[in-house]
Length: 520
Image 1 (cartoon, one colour):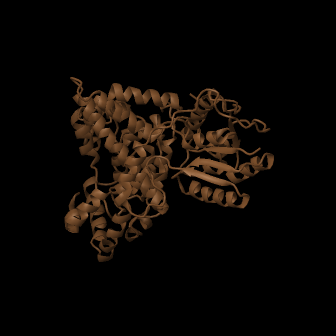
Image 2 (spheres, one colour; image 1 turned 45 degrees about the vertical axis):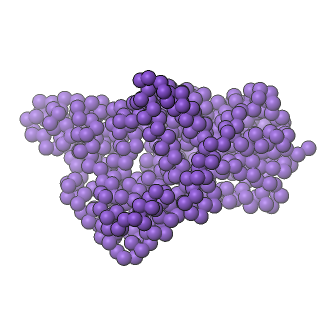
Image 3 (tube, one colour; image 1 turned 90 degrees about the vertical axis):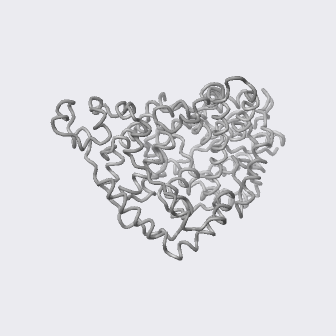
């Protein structure tokens, strides 16, 4: 008797799950999640990701059990686990979603493809999000995205409807995180995993919080509730992108003529555009996996590589840059696993320009800090903010101005940097300028309670700009830009490039015991 293996990856749900429904229509199926030790030893993995995965697998197991199937979890290399399953009971079909992950998962998927060919097993992969595999030009991408998002969502399997293939396989113990070298720190205020919680967050946003989205997502004070907070549930596939898009469109129709719903409507319209951009950035990594490791525009090679400053990096990681808005963001990130987009961009900008750090080590550190780490978005944004794509506007965020604009009363800085709570407003964002008598009055010692900035912000930023623009001015760098735009730029950006002078474009400056069985 043959059967299908449903390989769950970053798609931890039963709703709108094409591989699961395809296998269900074929007959018997075995649902598997493979916990890969080498994946968790990668430098972009962290303890909070591990625990969020566990929480999401518990929820997925419940969903599948209601439908009549059992989620089997194995530990090991994927091809080795598939070999063990195949030796116990041969299967003819492997189904999964396509994955646009890090370099490890890309290499692993190529190994799985070879294994399937050698074993004469058909591996059927289904699109995930709005990413198009094998895309040669961006001119058709938006149309393909809308087709994918407008296709009907697949209902979850009916209770008891799945024909579970029973495999004589002993249950294993959930490995302790330290076995994979994961740190012992889990942000105490991070979001918890699982589809049920993801659905709750989605409904709360659509019905209530979306009214604050437009205008509320930039300040770190209002963003924790104004933002959708769906990102970790999308990153781990507890929710599908298509269901979020369609739920948002449905809500927009409901409130189209509803009195007093203008701010909800504006918020949801802005949110919809960002869902589109979510997939746009993942597509970049799908089309060019090397951007995780190398500059997208190779003309920027050696820009920062030879000038690595470990002291600057250590200060950033410790939240001891001396710029209160930066250090407060690092503190919030450490405790919650999340900060809003503008503050993420500011962190990378500060790292890339005044601190002059290469984006790759900074990106690995932030990947561990972000609960919602999505490789395609993450590495595309790291390079975009660091100015190495060659096609994006150079955006340099001044951390003092960001504090003045988005935390003008100092509530955010004072919350996350308790030592500065008594500092007067006029010194709060530049405490290194504070006279010694003021320091004594408010009980703060600059250089101890708050670091002294390692560089002069204005001078270091000016020097960084000069280095960036010197590279951009090279003829060979300008000439290579068009090919990158064709492959990675949005169609709108390409049209603008075709109409504008290139010089004009350049100027726009509670996790319990780890010893749990897999019997979820």
